[in-house]
Image (cartoon, rainbow, N blue to C red; front, side):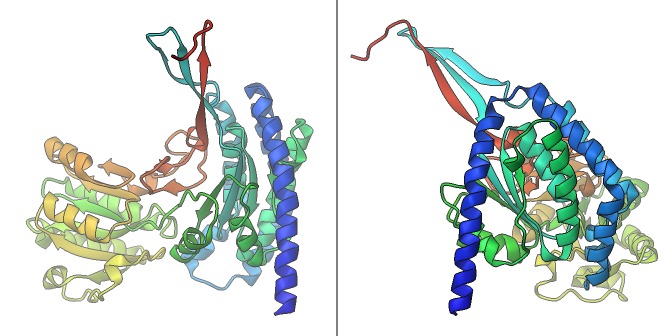
Length: 423
């Protein structure tokens, strides 16, 4: 017990030191011109490319020790193409408009006071994430673009990859003249450091967890600083009676099987009862050929008796794997009722050629992102034009959906007068 307490104290002290350095870096970043921050991101992209052999070697080390599902392993895996996409993401973030050069609103009061609401950085961000090593580079890019310092704690399974990526990005930032503490990672994968981050009141302004339900729940329960949660992706694709069958086949296959382990993957197919007898067997055949397994409700099993029956919790499970839940529904209202009962307000999709039905569904669906005639896997900061993302927010306060640079700003007020006094 004494040893654990001593370790906890050590991590708290380490966090305090990192937090103090991050606050100093954040203050310096807030004063920098956008051109300087953008140049730093391009330098970081160049450094990533230069360090590709070292990063891929570190990732091989992580993969060699990985024990988990193939879909989860796909999240961890880096290759030349993914590393290049990571570097391009930094450059795309650099090309975005400056989120700090925004006057959000202006008005003049009857007494002549001119009031402006102006975007500004949040300050110091703390990011706790699992498995996907590219998250560190994406998060750093978005933080720097929005003038924030960031402390990144990746999962133990991606420890070596995260360290190598940090080394490269930090070298690029330093070459551009940014403070070294702009982006920091702890020297350990010990979970006690997570506790130190969650208790870092006055050092971290916002904690962003990105991972599974267990991680997000832990952070939400234990954090003493504000949390911007990246919730689980219990996403549905609803195929309406007026859907184009070939479009439905193509979109569903992509939504489920392009990368089954990502948070934007579809976990449940909802299909209208009027078209299920003809279309559902075709969809099942398509997906089975791609290696997908199934969990089906009783109505779906009357059409495809070979489908395994869904258990009591399957429709509330984010598989993050090649497993698809299937439910037959009685139209848009029935589909929305299922989404409300089982979804996580992450990403939803409707496939239909009926524009009025689609618009009504888009208006009523409670998800942070709802798509019409498109794959749920488009719920991604890069696909939204943000260059990258720091997560997908599903809460109802502050940011929702893919979190880009604009979503990591807050605001302040500037008031200009001519000698007014309050009476």
